[in-house]
Length: 311
Image (tube, rainbow, N blue to C red; front, top):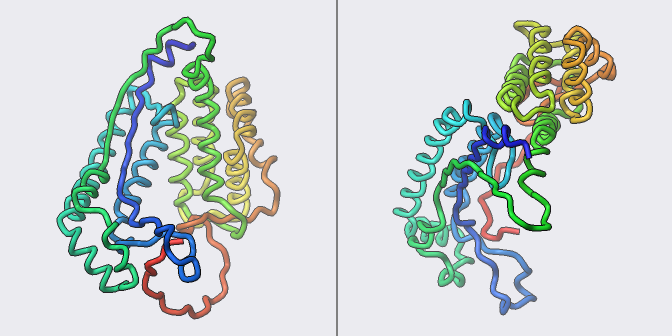
């Protein structure tokens, strides 16, 4: 096992828990009337804050670490910054929990008035005390000190540590794939924020090996080649497409980083252009980092109220 790497790893675990807002239906229910599923006992909008906090914490951890054991592997030089980001999220969760517990009975009654069909199930709805016990945020930071034991079992910690550099590349590729899909012909300047986060992640986790430092240098150089302002289009967009093509593939990133490490950035300069299929059209899911031509939107029906049944 690479003891040097182990000594530099802090495991940061952050967990947000909350009640689901649903209960299962009674198996004794008449199957002619009820189908299998669950019953919402509370307006789900009251629980959104906990899901949002969980996502925010995961983004913070993913930006500075890589999945490891029950949490995230984070180096010494990044753990304090990460904890400083997570503490306000934990505080937000605790404040939301206090408000939810205080108004629990009132919230249940309001939902029953809005959805009277749930009334037969109210005897099974959780109490405020149960909600208080099941809801909250937990942050822990620890190190691992594996000890040799006489066993024929495979050393799982060694396997995990040896695969961390590769996992970083897979997480980067997943982030790009989750954000990038066909559909546009130019990008906004905000795409640089994504590239910057990916470069910083590689730089932070460089101690894991796998030429992650070279990957960070490549991304930095790629960002510097993009225009400083305005839409990214034309030849610049073709370059950006090549960058994203590489970053969406762990195998391409590995080849590129080895080329940078062995021969320098100059040797890798043409790689993203070579790999970019032209013409390339891409867009970003969610907020429009990439812009596509769109036709006028069709009128939509007003949103209906949330149903009591959760399928």
